[in-house]
Length: 149
Image (cartoon, rainbow, N blue to C red):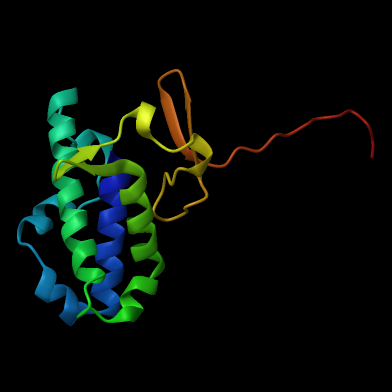
């Protein structure tokens, strides 16, 4: 979930640079408290139910911004900003609408792991977990030989 919040934060930061006046028209005061700092695991609520509810809050923030970005009155160039395109893709992979209600996708309803965006700063970075250690990035396979060449 932290990747979703951080994706929204990255889109806000990009829009603040490219179109600050447009963003001021869309701005919600509660966004300051939610997104002024990096969205990291230790800042999220404790417990599965509380985190699920918080994910929906983040999801609704993103839907509001995406609706504004894709409205007829919005400048078309805003949709071409890479952080906005990433935001749209991350929202599709993590949320869905059912009976006019926003839902968080569970693993049974999520895209394949290789298709997921795990970092708003590098959409091709992969998620990995080994025991309790989690990482987002790249793996390199190194082979050591004893040959002089």
